[in-house]
Amino acid sequence: MRAWLWAAMLIVLATAIGVACGGGGDGEAEPTPDRPTLEAMLTEISLKIEDLPAGWGLTEGGFTENAQVAEDDPEGPTAALERLNGWGRLLGRADSYLVTDTLGTFTKGGTALIRCNVSIFADEQGATEAVAWGRDLLSEPAKASTFIPTVTDLEGGPISFPTIGDETVASEFTGKTQPEGVQITVDFTAQIVVIRNGKGVAYLTVGAIGGAKPGPEVEEFIRLLNDRLGQALD
Image (cartoon, rainbow, N blue to C red; front, side, top):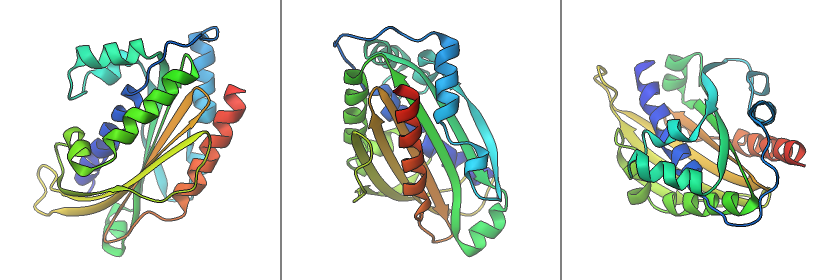
């Protein structure tokens, strides 16, 4: 059952790329932190395994440079890199977590995947336009699906969610995926929430399977990320 999780991770990755690639600004920027400072800030902000309940494991984690993010952008790496560089994205970090009992979660229903992405921009204008770009992408399935080639029957859109930080965008999508080498179709529900706090943007995707929907942990994690953004960027 682990094969389908790779497909689910593509959903999260694609959405995260969409938000991270948005943004831009021509306002006066503060002095740019050096690479070690940025890495320390992003590590402090991001979700960690100790933030999750028992039964989860880290499957992917690391810093994301602009050229790396641009490689898989459906608009092409050249346009994506221009967008990222022109809009002042300095560095990001992405961490993915999977539930360890995937078969049990599939059988009983529950949250199976969490992906946290954090990006720091040179100024607030860049971060603001990043959220605007992501809001447009997540406004309807037809736009979101351009980043999710492995999924069919995608439905959903914006959902009600508390305003957290300076800006909040939230959407929920349902869909189906049939991973390579697996003879079953997996139904999933994913909630994607994006927040901006100053010149930092955090976006979280929580995916559930087995007929379940993401629960209150989504808001709990978002509030935690917002607090950490505020502390790190103050």
